[in-house]
Image 1 (spheres, one colour):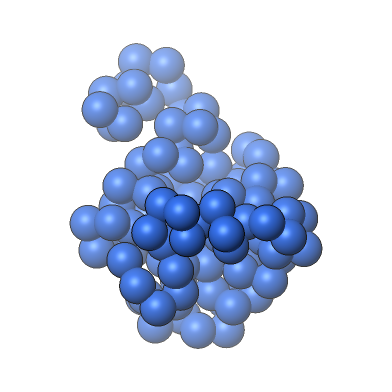
Image 2: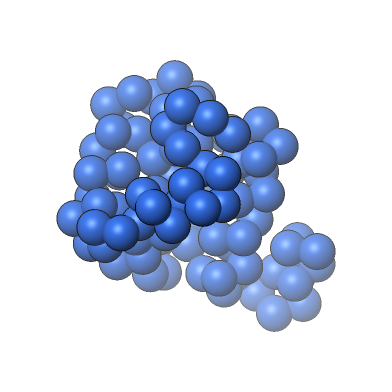
Length: 94
């Protein structure tokens, strides 16, 4: 659905963010990173996209980059970790 929406409407940050989340949950970390990076290029102050990018990077073995993006997300929104946790997303899990 995300890819269909992107083909239909273009690479909107919300669509890319959703695609990043789907790829993250599927374990396609490189694809997740690409989608989140594109979303952040269009909306650099999105704590949610930065947090998702950080998680994908951590799971892809990019520890320094992942931790930096998680810290940037927390700086933008101190509540982001709780929100992510409510969706079942943590640095340690899915």
